Length: 98
Image (cartoon, rainbow, N blue to C red; front, side):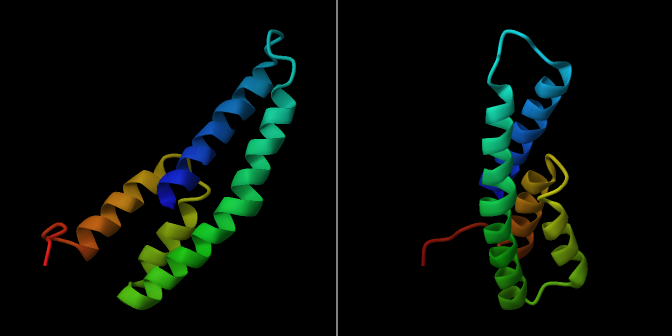
């Protein structure tokens, strides 16, 4: 879920930058910014928050990890680092077939 949320955040930041630059060859960029913004902020990020809070409760994570996971939806690129950090913390030996 963090990959999807992080990817939409990166796309949103890129489209906001392109909207700010005001490229004249793409007339409908404001519509794309609205769609990606709604997709990230209203749909995906709340689902990500609920899932990360559930993971924090099940894994009994420290409050610092919870704050980092919540901030991953605001800082572009942080979601990918947090995903890696949680995978290493929760599965230090990797995924093994049992």
